[in-house]
Structure formats: structure tokens, C-alpha cells
Amino acid sequence: MRGSGVFSSIANFLVPILKKLGGYALSRTADFAKDASTSLSQGRNLKESFRNAGNKTITRVGSDVLHKVQGGRVAKKKKIRNIFAKLPL
Image (tube, rainbow, N blue to C red):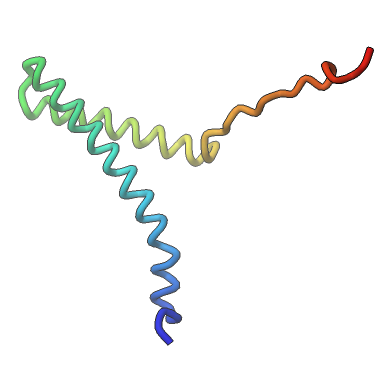
């Protein structure tokens, strides 16, 4: 039987996690590139632009990790039903 070994169960566990991390890393890389290009267009040199963009990206990643550790995911607002509107008064 194929796919019933130890490594396949580990792979089945890790693949969704790695997909999410890959998407997150791609979005943060895009933010880094955008910040660096904006800084370069303002006339800063390459080293300073990359350093500032890297610091911003590290700060964003740190705040995302801290948010994830503290609260998990973003909670959606629940609609509050007006139970008194249905009561016959």
C-alpha cells in the first residue's frame, strides 16, 4: 500500500502549514520590495533603502507573530440581534 508510512503522515501534516507560511513570506517579501523601491525613488542610497525596508518588515513580522500568539486569528464581529424588537408590547 502506498502512502501509509511515517513520512507520508508527516508530509500530510506539514504541507498545509508550509503552504500558509509560503504565502505569508511571499506577501512580506512584496511589502519589503515596495518599501525599498519607494525609498530608492525618494533618492536614498541602496544600502540605506534595504536597511530601512528590512527593519520595517522585521517589525511587521514581529507584530504579526505577537498578535498570533496573543489572540490567534482576527475575530469577526457578530451581528447583535435585537430580541426586543420581536416582543409584542
